[in-house]
Length: 268
Image (cartoon, rainbow, N blue to C red; front, side):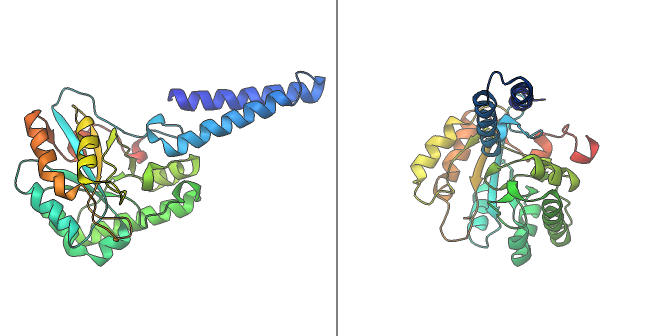
């Protein structure tokens, strides 16, 4: 159990104990349980938006150092233009990446999904839709939508994806249950390029990404915009980012290779 999750449970338990004491004895007063409950709520809120806290379940965010490997990951695709540009740059060298795809986009662009597979990259799931309310959905709905996305990718590529990264990385008690029911493993990150923000310049993205490039890192980039309404600013600097990997003697591999020993949700 993560320290953040343990802290949340202890805070909730303390809230209950103090509330019962106040109800039966009048001391120490309702201010204490109210304050504890608000603090627990704030901590729980942080857990939704910061996956590395592992507040609600196990989330893989980086690999143990020592292999000289990292994982470049791309979210929000596929897109027939921008994803192919990413694939073209990757094809010029030895690095392989992981593409966290959206099921509804995979249905629209099955040929791009097959090109990702044929180039030796890893296919993973980012949801059926890019649902920013994902952590507030019920487990059954989440499991159904994730299973639908897995089935789409498998139908068009023959590959059954085993990893899921939630939109914006958000998790909750209910979402973790839904992911487990779908038999997927939760992937977070250790670094971000923030290229999914339209206002970020390529140079800003490169600076952020390079800071995160160390042994075992998992870096989030984008091969498409969430709504396909702009070009992610990582595209112009991707070749330079790969050159930086080479200079540091690091190799990007698919997450199936980097985390081959991580059990699936069904195995836990």
